[in-house]
View: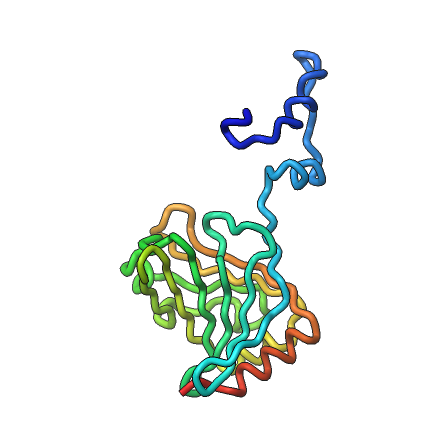
Amino acid sequence: MVEMGVDARLFTLASPQAVEDMHHVTMAEAQDYDLVTDDRYGELDLEPYKEGIVAWTRPEGLAAPGNVDQLTFLCRRGQPEILFFLKDQAGAYETKSVADGGHLHTNLAGDFSKVDASFVAARDVGPDAYLTISVTRGFAQALTSTPEVDLTIWFPSIVGGGFSATLNFSDTDHSKLEYTFSHCIE
């Protein structure tokens, strides 16, 4: 078990059980024994970039495959964008998928629930992948007021489906997003 990276304490939970019994691991135990990945993202950080500002966040724990290693919000030439950074996942998307029906799912109300793939630009840099999604001003405005958002780039022809991040925004995060979207990179 240890060679496979499993916490040996898990064995001590299972050992006293009778053959016909089973110990059901609680969520607290699963987190304590590193059986699940922490998918929470931290608060947004601001960083100057060229003439503008970007806001970014990373997972508080280790990112699992299919999760986003860094999410960056920016405005380029007046257009709000979201950049998904996928460490060591070059080639994890197919250009055909981007062109043939991939989209961005969100839990925002109204017309904000799906953004067509024609707004997704994908590129690999060495072992890493970058997926940039151009979004409308209305979408960007909605982000500055929603407390929680699930962002998933969905590619129907890829095994596993897509890349996702769930963010919980504080009032401070909302202010950082507003500031970011109003200070565009040219």
